[in-house]
Image (cartoon, rainbow, N blue to C red):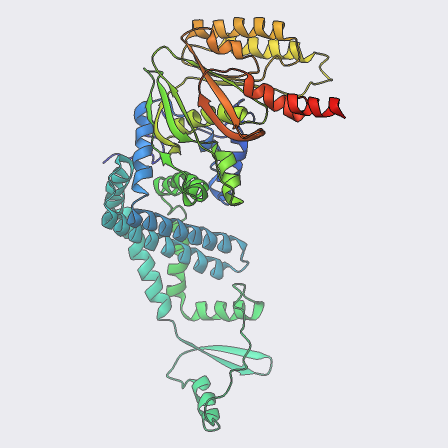
Length: 511
């Protein structure tokens, strides 16, 4: 059976060649933090390009969903973990072979690495058969692996490994030490002198005694005396050591590129599972989204910012979940409410959901239905840059103009508190023009704003409001609800903050 990749269903999907630039929106959505944390401890696999490469086909995403679901099968997951560990040990042996100085020792460590490789492949093949994976990816790799194990390339490797191992196991020799002189001889039935010495001391034993021996570290490096002895042994047994030398030259490229690629690519799944595991342990839900490039209906229940949740779960802090839904002609979430109430987090969550969906990963929340966008744009508030001699309003306008020039009907646009540096009237005028252009494009959008009038511009807009605790207007619930904005909760919150409520003013006037 043909096998291309465990990450990319077809050559058109990937893998990427070389490094992949970080998307522009990563910083605004904290996805740079996500990739950094998800790939921590996986440096040798160079996973960052995979986490920056978005899939563009629905079936390519489903392909990854199937593999992710297979990893929920304990037998499959454990066999993959064991294979990855064995391959790590194999690479460590190869690295050790390169570090060592003496030729014959390097040859032996190379043989050991090849042995670990052949055993890892055999064990993994058996583990996959026992696990019975259902995904197209693992099923195709299992079939390819069976073919590879039965090939002359692999059986020849195993045969030559055993030949070298048997030849070296049959080597016997004696060492005579006389002062500083060492003589190496062929074994000729001499008695084991170490057993003779132990036998002498055996008679002095008087029951069990406390073991006071000091553990000796077994360093892989040989000293010059050991290396010289080994050279003499090789002269006495030239055929056995010729096999070892020939093996290294004949199998220098024993590692099959398909297995090497699989070993690297499967780590993408393991790294993501490891990243979200603290959230799962805290009871937060994840789901495999239905992704469509033809319908823009969006839904996700009990969803959350995965980067924020990853930090909160590590600190044992509860995570607040929210729902989002766009139906029919609805395209734009207009999110309003008091500051520090979760509005920006809601916008980030919307972007993260769609990006993780394009990676083929399970997303935060339940019953998720997401849009397969072509490009994602984020315009989040930034501090004014005094070096470019542009004011904040001009910078906002230029950035937004650039986004609208590149956006299409298949794009997602996230806007967070833009035009906060100008007057309310001007901000309302500019936002109406921008939202009108987004409506004309028929793009999906989240607009975080202090201008509540934007939520009633037409059937394409949906009002979302970050709520406060009704019993304590200064306390944030971090829940963002689908309802009309009335401004009262925000006004009460601000008045409470600055001591301008009716009761506080009455107290102050009375005093």
